[in-house]
Image (cartoon, rainbow, N blue to C red; front, side, top):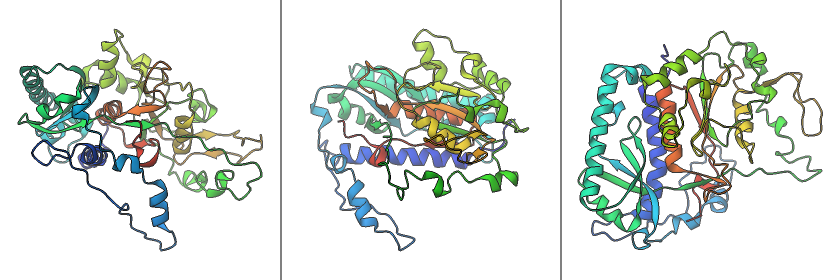
Length: 393
């Protein structure tokens, strides 16, 4: 049904997120082979100045999160319960997939499901090995598609013991990503880009829309703080694409067992049964789930950042006005106004949660895997502060 997302894109996605986790792992858990910790220091980020017009050194030094790079906390002696992501040196489901195959179709096929069972067997062996070492754990997630890994809660003093299991490739303590901050320009700051965001041209996509390059047939996933799906910019009245890449029947097919979605597993663990009716909002937003709070309610309680990002990507409002009530354009278009949106809320709204204001790595990976399982075309992640990593721990 869908033949747009290819294996290379999925592998790139895996590499990008894997690099983020690997950077954190290198800093906090670099092992010299004898169980001791070593920390590699960097004086500046390796960024190429391709324009010759920007002082990248100053930008790097101002934004480099030195508290992360200089983190010398030894989690293994802190004796605390944390979520860790344990990656195996075994195949993922995508590793079994033939070259050129469609990801979503393969995952739904007999061969894809057989591959998923094979990956699950390696994870069961890992968990049995952890149990044999008399290490208590609580299973949070199993990842099979983009990575072969499990997220478990353990006492951090057992990290070295888990690393010693032959099939284990790495153990990474989950990172927290801060929610993106909303910055307000000072009154009268006429030359401030923030105050004149429309002058950047980011919304000027009419030329491409008029040429038919409007995102029709494409599905973009937004991993962020959620979406105000009642906003006019996401109304089906303004969604005019005749090429629907992801309709309700497609979502029902996935929900009814074509693939294993983390969204369903999460809700089931909370005693809830999620159906396609819960996940499907409209033709514009055919799939939406809150991975942080484990339910299908993606409406944001405290941050509109996700709505803002979704609007830039695929909004369409014929009566848009700026903060002063003045019409901005006769028609407001996002970059791809006829693209569909898959909303993955990864920032919690639970005011009793220690993670309020942030998103944790294990939820982000779960959302990423569902995006691949659903066969989305593009994944957008705007995650927090410098490098995305929190200085909370």
